[in-house]
Image (cartoon, rainbow, N blue to C red; front, side, top):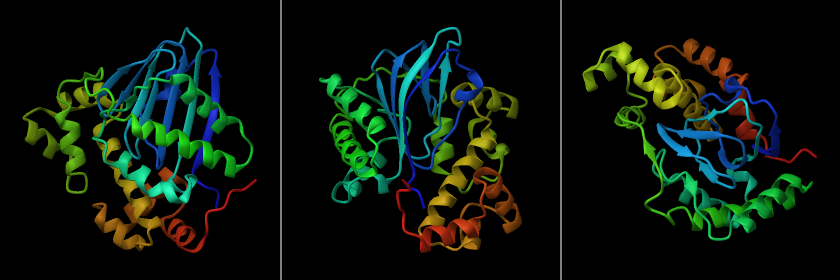
Length: 268
């Protein structure tokens, strides 16, 4: 199976807002803004973007781009799984990223940004997976060293972000929208408006997407599909199966077998 890896420098002359809607990844993302007019939303926080700004998005963090469609947009995007890092460093670097608070400290500050841009260019341009591993590991090491460099980072924190925090803390327990409304003493219409403004997503789609990402992770660890279904709050396996296949395009059983019996190999 091919490693979870994507690296590309991209230029879009006429950006389409719909293509940058709220989404999550099953891996980690390094994003570098090169040109355009945009803001980056991560779990309800808003980051203003300037040329050369770099953001780190950890696994399952919901993020989206608010972009001016009349101005061309250029960026580096690297999405990767732990298997794309050199073995001796992978575990410690991933631990540093996973410990980062949800939706905070995504924007990384560097004293030598030119060096970081050089590493990004190499990750995107070298041809062999082994070379990409080297440059990506060095790049991520630099990012982790600077993760909390500026603790007074610029964050435009959206009001009522505690709703997002509550959902993530109780992700597998929430039975419905009414539970959240009761917790925060608001109507379902108010909740929908607030949540859409914070994340660009509906409340239930946000919950389901995050549950499915956790499901995929559990399956990769060899947990049986029916057990994963129960952990993720599904009363019936058939409902879990349909949701999983719709989201990932493969069945839970297929992914469990694939992950537990196959070695990850780079397909040249």
